[in-house]
Image 1 (cartoon, helix red, strand yellow):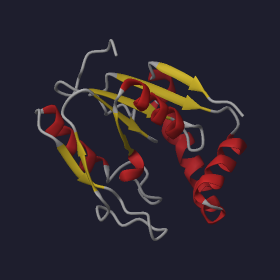
Image 2 (spheres, helix red, strand yellow; image 1 turned 180 degrees about the vertical axis):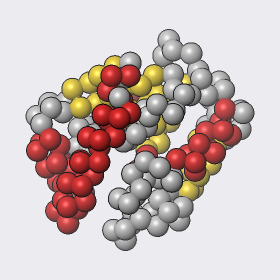
Image 3 (cartoon, one colour; image 1 turned 135 degrees about the vertical axis):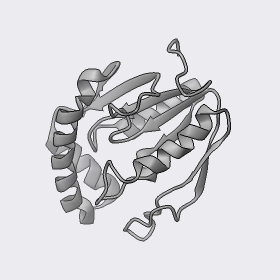
Amino acid sequence: MAAPPRLGGTRLVAVDGPSGAGKSTFARKLAEEIGAQLISTDHFATWDDPTTRWWPRLWRALDAVESGAPGRYRKTDWSQGFPCIGEGDEVTIAPHGTVILEGFSSARKANTRLSCAIFVDHPDGRVRLERAVARDGEEQREHFLRWQQYERGWFAVDETRARADYVVTSSS
C-alpha cells in the first residue's frame, strides 16, 4: 500500500505466476484484506491467445481508469467450454483505490503502470498441473500441458519472477 499509484490515482497490483501455483487464491485473499477490486487475465486470455491479441482490450480499460473514468470491458465467456471473446458479462474497473490484476502475464514488462508485482509459484510442475486439472476438469489436461510449456518460455523471456517486487511460494 506504500507504493505510489501509477494508473492515475489507482494502484495496480499484479499477481502473476504459472497455472496451478495458487495465484487466484492468493489474489482473492489479498483483495479481501486490503479492500481492492480483483480482475483476472482469464477475463481476456484464451487457449490460443495466452498473452498477445487480448492485451489491447485490457489496456483500453486501464486507459480510462488512468484518466479518472471507470474502465469497462466484456469478459471472455468460457461457459460453453470454449472462449467467446468479449461476449461475457461487462466489468467496470473503478478509477480509485487499488485494483489487483491476477493471472498469467499480468506483471509483463510492458505493464509499466504497476505499483507492485507479486509472483506466486509452486516448485513442482506436476503439482501445479494436477491443481489446474482438478480446478478446470480432466478434459483440459492437454491444454494445460501446452500452456505450461508456453508459460516456461514466457517467464524466461519476460523475466517475470526476477522483476517481481515479491515472490510467494505456495505449498502442498
